[in-house]
Length: 349
Ligand code: SAH
Image (cartoon, rainbow, N blue to C red; front, top):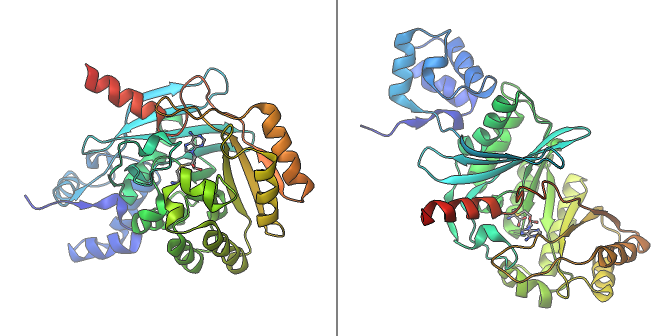
């Protein structure tokens, strides 16, 4: 059998062109698209306003890539929901749904694993198995919305993987989810987080300046950053911050710098002062994250006092700083941890 096409990864114009070529009327494409992107069905047989014949024809030509829930953990502390989803080929990805005062925010994965090798992160330990398709990133959002009976208002591309190394599928995902024939989410409510793939930051600002960029900085200088983030050896702090300044100039949008506080590594007063001097005058804010302690490494999260002192130095220098609260502390709700423990259990049995 020839490979079936990935129908949920197609834009409405692409689908329309395909169905017209099959001799179907134009409005059929709109109907099918709405089933896929507004009603989130994952089986052609559920598209009940189409004839049985047409449903069968579609199933012969197309495949719907789905995210099937294999594990769902709900935090008793704050209602955060952690999903492990199975993709059509059996791979597992992690997605986290967070409840805020303003609505639901969902943290989606862009790759199966990650190749970036950041020393503190659990997602990268086994490397990257493959990129996710646009349809598989969409499916993470759609399954959560369908099962919870909600609509998310914000999306962060901060799960497993480096989104800018899966550029084509990630931008396709962004285009489809913000399209008015689908979920129609505001681009301003979508953040993409990168460890600093500089050429792709330029591509993004030029093609899609309306999205929010988060940059995982985690250190004020090359000496520390290259030790904990191998990507820094390719694009150092200066080159990265220049790209960030250009991003702000082109898009007029504030950048968010992620900074995971690790005791004795990057959390001294001196680090804070150096960071402040580097970021001074930029339209940005720093998000301090008490580092998640991961079983596979020895990093220790900075104390609350250290976080406060660090943040005070940044604030004193005019840099807006927030300390991220830890969500879902009882359900391993971060950074590849649940997937790893799940996969390990599965291989142990
Ligand atoms: N590859 C992208 C997005 C995925 S990681 C990036 O690097 O930005 C999402 C965020 O979690 C990144 O800021 C990452 O550096 C951070 N992170 C990873 N492991 C962590 C840990 N153990 N504690 C705190 N933050 C961590």
